[in-house]
Length: 158
Image (cartoon, rainbow, N blue to C red; front, side, top):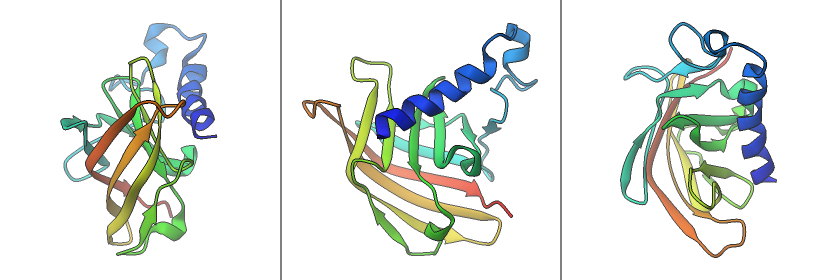
């Protein structure tokens, strides 16, 4: 299911831009339509992937994608569960096979996040922040990847 969601989100971005010229594929800021650039005080997602620092350059609106999604290095992303009921300070959510996703440009491509957790650390009416970590597993469970020191900030929809 999670692999399907990962491919579906990527597919949405590809489908939206299909049939358009290169000039039409991106907004004036060079991002896909609907994308929100990350900034120090706005939308943000950072993490370490197998110890290497990773910072999202843009995110997609969670209310539209059904996930908290931060894109780094082009089409690669981290996807986390999203539901309005999660946004209570101190709420912790343990990941299982269906909750967190990491995509990479390697032989695995889609990693199902398990054995991890997301915790809401701040909610102020306009923004929600949290931290996360998880172990990603390949589809055949033969390989793992560690996502640690994760942080996100998203705007709460009205």
